[in-house]
Structure formats: C-alpha cells, structure tokens
Length: 206
Image (cartoon, rainbow, N blue to C red):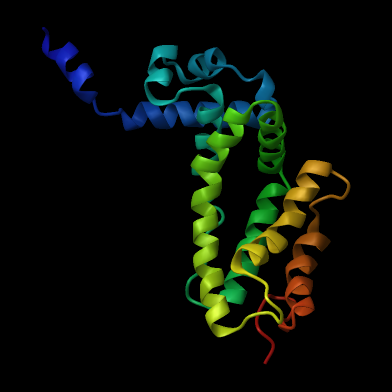
C-alpha cells in the first residue's frame, strides 16, 4: 500500500487554504443566487477544486453554504462580555439584525424555507449554527437573571425566544422589513416592557 493511500485511510489533514477557498466560493455564490439554485458543481468550479475535495469535508451543498455563512457571520456579531448583560444582549441583537437586514438575512430565510421540506437542512443549520450561538446567548441571559430578572416566572429559554423571535419572524414572513427603526427601537422597547429602562444607545438608564 502506498504512503499516499495510507495517509488518506488514516485521515489526511485538511488543507486549510483549500477549505477557505471553498467557503469563500460558496459565500460569493450565496450573495448572488438562491440556495436552491446553488450546486456542488458550481461551488467546485468557482473554488477551482474537484467535487471529491468538497465531499471529503462536507456531506451536502447545504452544509457547505451553512458553514460559509457561519464563518462570515460569527466574526461580525460578537457578544460583548465587558458590560452589563442586558447591554451586551442589546448590542448583539442589533449586530445580528444589521446583518440580517442585508443578504445574510435572505440566505437565512432561504435555509429556513428549504428546511421545511428537507429536515436534513434544518438539522444541519441547528447543529452548525443555532446550537452554538444559542449557547453563547444563554450564558449571557443566565448572567442577566443573576443580576435582574423580569417579573413573573419567565424562564431563560422563554426570554431568548421572545427576544429573538420577532427578528426571525420578519425574515420568514416578510410582513415588515428589518429596517433601521426596528433595529434601533425593538431591543430597547423589549427591555422597557419587562421593566428595565435603557437609553437609546442601549445603556442602562442611570
């Protein structure tokens, strides 16, 4: 058995440069095309690699596109950790909404729509994106509930659902835009309704 074959069977290390090229190609295609029309062939051609190279790392078109989205998205929506957790949540929510007001929001809406007829797409999206980001948010909300919590018996899970659901509803239903007014006002109004006053900049009122 050749050394090359042996390395492949034992798990050849990924080529990070090639992986990044594939993700960049998938992201560029996602900017201009619907998820439904993107193909593995198109990604491979744009990246200058073979389909076999892509399938070595990803098991479907959806997983490539989702990973491309995640790597682009995470660095643009950090969760601050050097301020009050309520302020951190407002900051994160606004960054997320700003991203979703552009093509990333269209991409997420398409992934969620395709997932209604293909449960595997939703599973990929949950595992590659949702669970990790929700864990980050939950840690901050847990911290918030140690310092302050809304009246009643609202749980951490309910709080997160209520805080982020309107954004995803606008992406899915398209009944209202994710515009500047919504981005500026919703998180502040959300906390005010629960009894925590914040100024327009998203800082706790003195």
